[in-house]
Image (cartoon, rainbow, N blue to C red):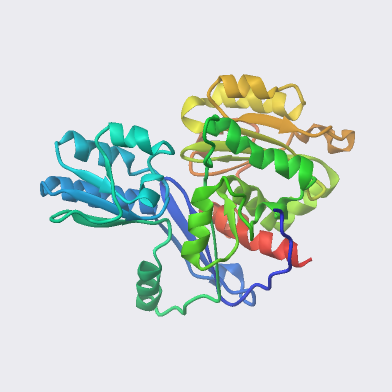
Amino acid sequence: MFDKAPIPIPAPTLCLDIGSGTQDVLLYYPEREVENCPKLVLPAPARVLAERIREVTARGRALHLHGCNMGGGFGGAVRAHLEAKLPVSLTQSAAYSLADDLDALRAKGYVITPDCPEGAEALLCADFDPAFWRAALAALGLPWPGLITACVQDHGFHPGRSNRRGRFVLWERLLHEAHGQPESLLFDIVPPEFTRLKDLQRSIGGGPVADTGAAAVLGGLFEPSIRKRAETRGLTLVNIGNSHTVAFLLFQGRIWGVYEHHTGLLDKDRLWSQLARFRSGELEFEEIFDDQGHGTLRLQLPQAAQGFTPTLVLGPRRGMLEGLDVEYPAPGGDMMLAGAFGLVEGLRLRRN
């Protein structure tokens, strides 16, 4: 499951960090300075799809969604369409973007069908649309990449089980099976429960994929100064995303602990208090899970790490910890590209 087969880094490699608000894009050339590699920050595909759905609603037309499992950030626009008494149909794979329980969707009035009903406007569900990227790169005068690698956040498909608990298995495998090696989080073979990642991998042509939380920690390690500091003492790396907040305890190239919560349920004081107890080994899984987060897990923390006190904060919501004793690194010179640089770092680590 944690395949570390060496993968060369072709020139160029297209790296995509697809979040709930933005998709952050790096066209990486190994022989260039990172400052001279093309970079983009674009609206997330789910946000673009939501706007297109609202346009269909405004025209009073039936809606049909097809494609694959993608980020569900367009769900509100679909519900508004249905509430406007306008029909919504979906293919089965697209329906998984909204819910794992397809019977529950049917009960709400959604029609799940492989065919687009006559008169309906069809829209594509996809975290990665090859046609869009071919047109975009061509318009910019840029070549089609030799490799595409990407990350999204995937709760996973866990029938009869909490998605929050099921997702945390990702971190349990990291610490217990992969011994905290961060490069193990870049998948050639996606664990079967992570259906969104599997669809993403098919869409990009089979390249390696990762969870956005994993890409964030790898992005921190992309920065040489952070890797050097973590050799002599432990660091806490926090990624405060639009949806999820993930923290990692780093020391000597290894991850010693993971914390994950929902950003919308946190404020400055709560997050800072939980991070302090996380670093000291006092924060328990049940407290975070019972608070509607995902949980926390750690190995036996080494004394040589000196408490993991330095705290480095990434992510679009990093301002939540403003005014506290934290640092705001910018891997590769651009904080918004931390996840994309993390994908490059994962490839680099697997070549060593």
